[in-house]
Structures are given as structure tokens and as C-alpha cells.
Length: 418
Ligand code: SAJ
Image (tube, rainbow, N blue to C red; front, side, top):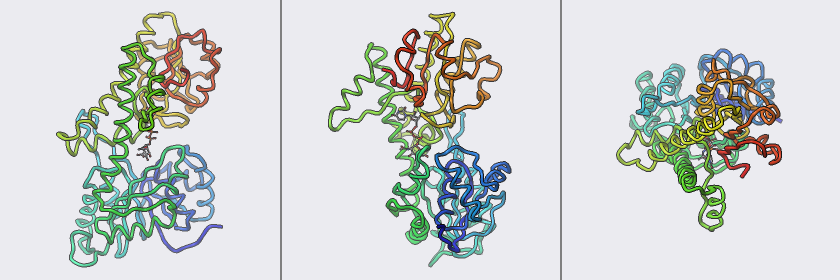
């Protein structure tokens, strides 16, 4: 049974975080208005369908749309709580400058409908200080409302930062059960946001200030990036010294206080490959390990590409099967994917010799346009290809028995066949 309540919530940005969050809030009984700039996304959701792949999301969205608890639109309307979950990319000019313009644009739209008593929560991963910048947009657009941190006494609006920390493929589960950091511009703001999250979060909700919550999110992903960089650096050392890095890591991890992560073809996705740069940008002279980790993980992609090219040159008649384009196993997300970049680069150099296997793609992405590379299935690859370059540890690739690849030249960048 769906619980009914009068709380209205508006979620700005209906992507990988905003849509599952909207659906979970609606299931908890909020009346949710989802807002997106894409007419196609809005229409899809209003039909009770989804535009992204995520475990169990389709059924949940259909149920809450049918119950009238979730509607989507292009325009922001009045609400009690606003959750902003729009992208925060960075510039690709080598400076990695965070781009918070989507947040500020969303804030301008929200400002137009704000009323006394409303609570605004930013969830987008953001450089330290962004929540205050969002507050400043509200202050400028709505001088009639008292803003937290800028007024004496009780403000009219509560503003908080509460980062998501869900893992693609487990989003619905983790939205409910993960702990949350809730950072208010003031303690009162944090308490207002806490009361909202308590409606649907079963994990512990820990309150703090907005700047600490912003930094916490960046630290979580930078921590993982640094640890993966350690594994990737080891793999390049092992290649030079003729060692099996997987064996070395397996043995080292038998130490009770050692847990080395897994090397791969580089780090992808729109979080770990991006967020550490926000720390570096904010403190360029101090964030040395964090910057180096980013560079090492990017260098690993070039290392894999160079080794694959050596195999291609040494075997000029060989067909090259690239297994996987996604940024990690068992998902259909190709954002910032090193696998995609490596495969597309090979396709540009070796054209028809390159075949792509990606069970999560219906067609080859634009990066392959004009290269002559083909999307084939795994059985065709096992028949036609002489070199197998394993780039993503999808379950379907892990399941290929040793005898079916025994006559191939294999470069396994994920260590799943070793
Ligand atoms: N990877 C490795 N070796 C490993 C683990 C991961 O090479 O041992 C690679 C993956 O193949 C992938 C990349 O790292 O290319 C990132 O994958 P991931 O599974 O580590 O993380 P994401 O990007 O899917 O999700 C992360 C999570 N953050 C942390 O684990 C600290 C998630 O909890 C966050 O919510 C998400 O970022 C986010 O939205 O920020």
C-alpha cells in the first residue's frame, strides 16, 4: 500500500540520480514533480516508462506514475522541498575547471517559485562552496525572502547539501540503505533536510555543515581513485618486470591489513574519473597525490592502448575483438569509459580488423562512425577474431571457458581469465 501525504517535492534533473530518487520519494508518499530540460525524458516518464537502465526502476516508475504520485514536466512549479540533481561536468581544456552552470540555472528556476518555509537540497556532486553560491542566486532573485547565513534570526528558506553515494546497478537499494551526510548552511537547515530524508532513508543520516558535506562526497570518490591508481601503477610495473599483477595482488591481500583494488584499463564513469579534479581545482598546490592518481589512471588507458597496438602490429592479419565498451561491468553506461576510448582508437587505426562485442549496446556509439568496425556477438567474436582484448569484466565474458579462447592471442586487462 502506498502511504499518502501532502508533502510536495520537486526534483530538478531526471537522470541516473534524479529519476530513482523521485521514484523512491514518491513510493514513500510524497507527491513528486520531476523536472527535466528534455521533452523526450518528460514524455517518457509521464507514460510510466524509463529512459535509463537500472535494476527494478521500470516497475517502480510505472507504479508511482500510475498512482499519480510522480509527474514530469519542463517547468518548475511551487513545492515544499526542491532536490537539485543536475550534472556538474568539468572543462576539457586541460584545466579541469568545474562547471556549476547547470546548478545555477536550476537555482534560477527554483528561485521563481520559492515561498516561505521551503527547503532546497543540492545533491549534485559539487566543488566546496557551491551550496552557498546557489543560496546567493536565491538571495539575488528573491530579496523578499530571508536566506540562511545572510539574515539575522530565522530564515524563510532552508538550504542544504546532501550528496548521493549510490552505485549504478544497486541504486534503488542503496538510496534507501546507505548512510547519508546532510550538510546545512545552518544547523536549522540541516534539521529541515534531515526530516525530509527520514521519510525514505533507512541508513543513518548524519548532519554537518554544507561545505563539509560537499568535501565529503569528493573525498569518497578521490579515495577510491587513489586506491585504483595504486593498483594500476602496480600493473604497469608488473608488465615491465614480467610479473602477473593479479597473482601479486591476490597474495598481498592475504595480509590482514592490505586490500589492494583491481587494475583495469583505466577509470571511467561520471564520478570517480571527474570528482577528484574538483579537489585539485580548489587546492592545486596541495592536492598532489589526488592529481597524480587521476594522471596515473588516465595513463593506464594509454598503456593498454599501446600494448594492444603492439599486438595488432605484430599480427598484421589478425582480427581484433574488443570485448566491452561500458565503463564497468554489467551496466549500459559508456560515460568517460576507457574501454570505449581504447576500442574507438583501435578502430580508427585498424578499421575493419576491429570487431566490437558489447551486449549492453544496440548499435556502435558515434565514436566508431566511419571506422569500418562492426558490432558483433560473443560467439561471432570467438569464431572470427584472432586477438581478444578484454576491456570490461561483464559476466558474459567471464563465463567464456578457457578452451574456447585457447587458440587466441589474449590481452585480459581485467584479470578475469588469469
Ligand atoms: N575500477 C577499477 N578497479 C577497481 C574498482 C573500480 O578499475 O578495483 C574502475 C571501474 O571499472 C570503473 C571505475 O573504476 O571504470 C569506477 O567504478 P566504481 O564501481 O568504483 O564506481 P562508480 O563510478 O560506479 O560509483 C562511484 C561510487 N563511489 C565510491 O565507491 C567511493 C558510488 O558509491 C558513488 O555514488 C558514485 O561513484 C557517484 O555517483 O559519485
